[in-house]
Amino acid sequence: MLATTKTKGGAKGAKKTGKAAPKEPTAVPMVGYVDRFPFLREEHARLEARHRMQTEDEEEGLFEKLAVNMDDVKGDTSHMPWATGSTTNMFTHLVWRMLDACETGSTGGDACREGGVLGAAVTEVVNSRGAVKEQFELALGMSLAWYNHETFAFMHRGDPEQGHAIITHLGTVWKKLLKFDEATLEAKGVKKEARDIAIKVNTALKNYFASKDHYNTFTFNFMVKPTAPKKAAAAAKPKAAPKPKPKPKPKAKAKAKTKTKAKVVTSKAAASAKSNKRAGSASAGSASKRSK
Image (cartoon, rainbow, N blue to C red; front, side, top):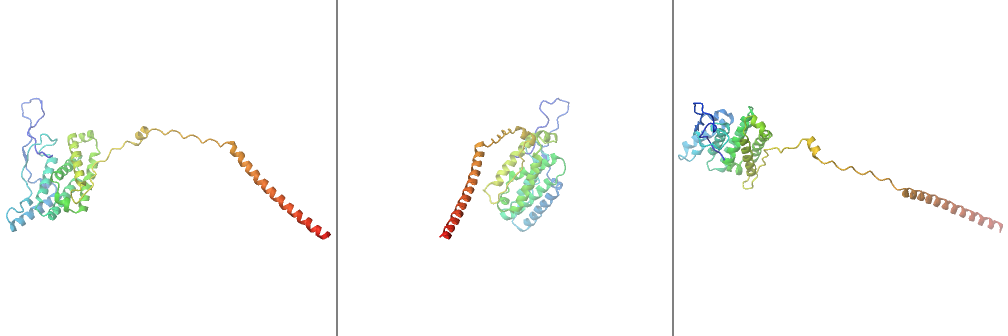
């Protein structure tokens, strides 16, 4: 995934002007590069101090990896959309080499040191207040370094809360950067190829973080899905058919109500007639008794 230098400079078919086109340097010094980043510089100093302490007490070469490799950056980036000395390439190498220096064979200790390097790196990415291009290259450098190294110890024995915080902060930065379309990023100095690589690398990281092959699993949301504007969505949505008006109730039902009322009235009249009849028969019976 990572390449490190361009061997040929200048565009093909360029007009000859009597001067050779400037070539990409075959090597870029790494020494002193870490001093640009205060948080990573602190982690670098811890790794170097522990290396010096351990090599004094332990067998020579046992903790050699704790010394960060500061050899010049060189290689071939002719197929990559960035130069050897670009922020993307240099920051990738810095973070990747510092993660390499964390490895001693002690999984718990390595996890702590890897968490420290990752936390410092994401802080540098978040605190980048410069141009969009600068923050994009730092974020891509961190994603590339993490993708290449994999941080086995941190994924198995690292602090889950720390991992969640680091990945959330990195994802928030990427959401902001990838919200720009290709044309906007091109205008800000980020090539389409770099944007495509960022999406591929972060997709691979997302799958890796969610894998059940290691103890810690994380959710990495790095891109906001584009949504259609409300007006356009409303126009595109087919209109619902108008609801039919309710039909008027048939007159037959009204007659039925009238009949019911009539029945009630009739039943009341019949009841009063029966009560009058009973009263009349009772008075007649009493009168006959008196006559006897």
